[in-house]
Image (tube, rainbow, N blue to C red):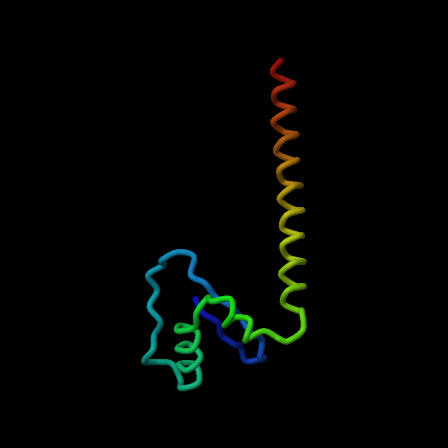
Length: 94
């Protein structure tokens, strides 16, 4: 878990979803890249600390809410699609 910033100044919160056994090549990183890697590696997922990295406005909250609603809507559409296929299969079998 951690966060980093790209060369455009955009912030990214990163999380390892599975152990991929990839080892970063620390010896070939330049100083700036190594500093960004080290900073991202040691950052916490604590909500209070994360909030400190966010803007004072509600842009993050709005973005995550928008994503959550879109995700929920897509999930409902996918469920309805699967349900209609299952119902269609059951009706055809009768």
